[in-house]
Structures are given as structure tokens and as C-alpha cells.
Amino acid sequence: MHRRISVLTLFCMLVLSIAFNQVQAKAKNISSIVLNYTDDTTKKAVKGVSFSLSKVATGTDHRYKVTKAYQKVKFTLAYDQTLQNIQIAKQLAKVTKKGTTKTTNKKGQVTFNKLQPGVYLIRQTKTVKAAQNYQKIEPFLVYVTPSTKKVSYDLTAIVPVTIMSQSSVISMIYSLYDDFYPQEKKVADYVIAHAHDVVNMNNSELAKACETSVATISRFVKKCSVESFHQFKVVLARDVVLGEDVQVSSTISLEDVHTSIANIQANKMNEIKATLSLLDEKQLKEVVALLSKAAMIQIVAVGNTIPVAINAQYMFNEIGLRAMAGTIWETQLAFSMTLTPQDVMIAISNTGESKDVVKMIHNAREGGAKVIAITNNPQSTIASLADYHLQSATREKLFLNEFYFSRVSAMTIIEVLYLFLTVGNEKSYDYLSKCENLMADEKL
View 1 (tube, rainbow, N blue to C red):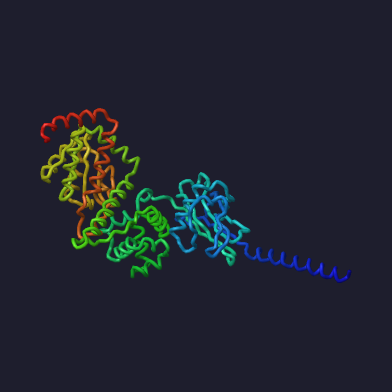
View 2: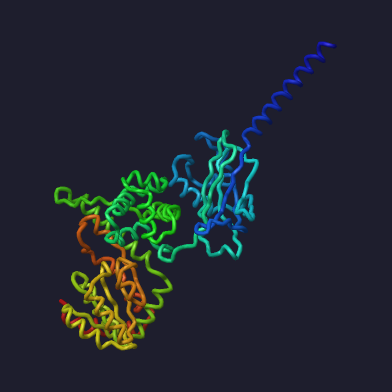
């Protein structure tokens, strides 16, 4: 009897020991995630912003088991795949309904405690009125390993910059390329060629890769109308995820026509896509309303953008809008002196620095006419003189570094204006039909 009790006692002690060790092991594996949310400019803590945490998978070291809530979503987890994780986080955020939600305190801090190893999704949910102007933090994944005790993330509250709110940072780099100093062009070239890698670099690593200084990186970022290198990477990551950084070879050769045509196709498609993404909705509505009521529209251009102006004149005339363009600069200049407050000038210049176009803009403004500029550079002289600026994107420097030759992006903007002025407007349809009938006899 005594022996049976001893065996039973030993068995119980063994079970208790195993259970204790398991609890102790779990206790050692318990981790926490800390979020620190501060204003990017003032560096002050931001209070009252809510973040939600949801468990995506259990396990670690590439042996992950996806939780029930996400089993219908197709994705592959990998700790070292930054861009892939950005895409997965966005994908999972769309189907996430529940989670543990906490709000930043006066220190701008949120802490999620007692977390077991696995993968967690963090997304911003609500915000207080005082923080509504900040750009929303994109959802992201956190990988917690058995050795992780605490993982901290410094989140930056950024006020979206108007010029970057819709546009691609890659497009911005192209449009500002001629304004960069030689050292800054090194950075531009590297970012364009290695956008995927730059997303995962800090400013020191990028400076080393470009063989330049951290100060140059800071100047470069500021010229791109971005407040900090962190914000620059956020926008660049968005470009990468959305495919804005399409890599196009600069090789155009008759020896490989197929590849060359593929490069040109990708270039032009990306140029049109980028141009459309740069159009501001509110400004576009105002421009269309202005053109529809204008007594006269003068479209001015010099050099290789003259064909765009001539085409715009024809398209506007065809739908009943009085428009004028010319191939001779002196004629355009003289006509610009006749514009009145009821008229509108559209000034087209790739670089935005044409002296001849600037002279015509001054004439238009003296006469009280509104000026709409179409340029690649929002910081150019012409853009700053205009009442409205419609930015076009360019990719031609991939092929020819010395000058701009493409008219595709400027022509795209003209066609956008034409369509908005035409669709749903019976008067425009009548003029268009009349014009086609008049020209019908000239066709075979």
C-alpha cells in the first residue's frame, strides 16, 4: 500500500512538474508590442489615436498556422519580405472585423501585452478630432518570436503634403530631375533603379549606396516636397506596391526590336498612368468650368509642344469652344496682348521654364485672363505664375538624358479636358456632329 502511494505521488509530481515547466515556458515566451506615435514635425506625442491588434497566425520560423479568421485569404508569410508583408497587411485589413483596440495615451503610447509567438496585424482604427489632419498609418504585420520580449515601433504622424497626396514620388523625381545638383542626381538615379531596396534602407545606408552624404539625402527629400526620409520611404513603398516603379530598360536597339518595343510600351503606359494620378479632382473641376465659360481660349507653346497646342485648338473648336493656337511665336505673343478677363490661356511647356511662354503669360495676366499651365515641374516658373497647374509626368529621360521629347503626357491632359467638356453636354455634341457632317464629303 505504501509503495502504491509513493508511485502515485511520484506520478502526480511528474505531471505537476511538466505543467509547471509548460507554464514557465509560456511565461518566458510572452511578449509585448509597443507603439509610439509622435508628430513628425514637432516630435510631440499624439494622444487619442486608436490601434487594433489581430492575431494572423501562430508559430514561428516559417512554420506558421494561420488563424481561422484569415484561412480563406491566400497569402504566404515570410519575415524578411518587407514589400510582400505590406501587401499582405493591406489585404488582411480589408477582411478584419475584430481585434483588441487600444488608444494612445498622453505619451502617444499604446502597449499590447501577453502576446504569444506568432504574426499580428496592426491597423489604425479611430482618431480624435485634433489628429484628423494626419495621414492614416498603413496596416502592418509584426512577427513575434519566442525570443522576443518587447518590440517597439516609432510611428510618425504626418500631415499629407498637397503635392504628394495623390502623386507618385517616382514621377516627382523625374519631373524635378533637371533641378537636382550632381550629387542629388546620384540619389535620384539610385532610387529609380533600386526602389525596392531603398524602401528597406535608412538614410545612412542610402547615402553610402549613392556615394554621397546624409545631408545630400535630406536635401533631395526636401526637394521632392517630402518632410522627412521616413515619409519619403512611405510614399515610395506605396509606389512599389502599386507598380509605379516599373523598371524599364533604357536600351533601344534595332538588334532586339521585340524587347525595345516592350520597353517603349511600358514607358508610355507608365507615363499616362502617372499623369492621370497627378490630376487633382477639385482643380480639374474648376478648370473645366473655366474653359466651358471662356469667351476665348488661347493655347500657347513653343518648340516641340506646338503640335499639342495645335491639336488642342482643333479639339476645342470641334465642340464649339473658341480657341486659338499658332506655330509662329510672334503671332502668339501679339494675340496674348488682346486677352481679357473673359478669356483663358493654356500654357504648355515640358520644363516650365520657357522664356517665350513666360512673356505670353505676363501679357495674359495684365489683360485679366486666367492662366492654366501644363508642365512636368510643379516648382517651375510657369507653374508658379499660373492660376492653375496641371502636372504631366515624363519618363523619356530613361532613353534620352539631354532633352524632353515626349508629348504623350501633355496630350493626355488635353484629351481629359476635352472629354469632360464634351460628355453629357448636348451643345458640344451638336457642334461635333455638325463638324463631322461638314467634313464627311472630304472622306473616301
